Image (cartoon, rainbow, N blue to C red):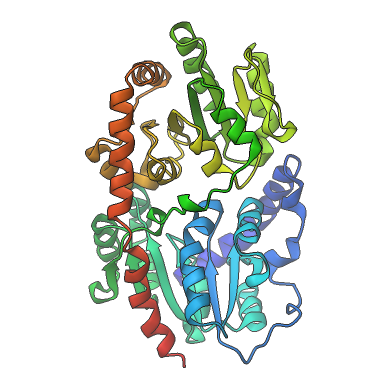
Length: 426
């Protein structure tokens, strides 16, 4: 009954969902492309063999797609004959998947969580295993897979306290979902405890760590643009993955910093590409001398702000940073990936909203690699303090690198769960 009511509500909300997609497409045209895939109306991909073992990995957007990369590589190494289907929900996730995996995986948008769409998708691809990255609990999708005996694994499982409270409002419904999942590989013990409290079978829940600790910093290729920035001998603040309403606060903090550190450069990298132009206009409206990465804008002596309007180069941005501020945290969107700057030995500042990376932020803060600031005023103060204290910066950076190095067992631990599930399919 709960799932029936959920489906009815979803059908009624569908016009609003489509309007939202079309509205977003005004800034990001990719949103209005491939809409048929959101209803699983696509044809079977050319060359797809329904007789082969098909492994389906769902990663909602950029961060989850990047986190899944080590898992995909390991599955391809151990099961070279298997077909891997990768689904995402956003165009940026799609672009990231294509950049990471090329033609080695089959990419599609995940279907809307409607009974017909889910069943059509399963008819097309006939997966034997579905790996849901992080917290993708879609009732109809999980039900349809369970009905067809598709093995279900929640990998890199994360459940914030805030999300757990939300799911807890529908306790019976949530419990019925979790009971259908074969295994849950949680990032940390608090995540595991929350899943169990909501009804997951304790015998099916295991803490494996976070795949996001597996940051391939050794694979950063040389790019002339970033090499040139690294040679200019000026301190660099990278504000990465910023969200709407956050850039103004960062620019205000940056302006205060310029009083004490006039040579400081800000590299501002919005989270979503449809907001690149907006961030550029905001910087110019505030009177800063700005250049764009997309224009290969040369950083001159008078350049103050670089707009990082490119995709797939976040590690390059961090690699030239003196200090990193990780966005999505001065506005209430839960913070973005703090492990990339940590892996590169960059001291990290974040705002108070951290629920997407709560456990990892706490780990980094306890280790002395990360500092939380309450607002733009504290951000400015912390930037100025760290910029003149090289010893503290070096210590924070080394502690972050050490923590990342100590948490490299997530993939082997996850594969100890995945391998038996696949053996059951053979």
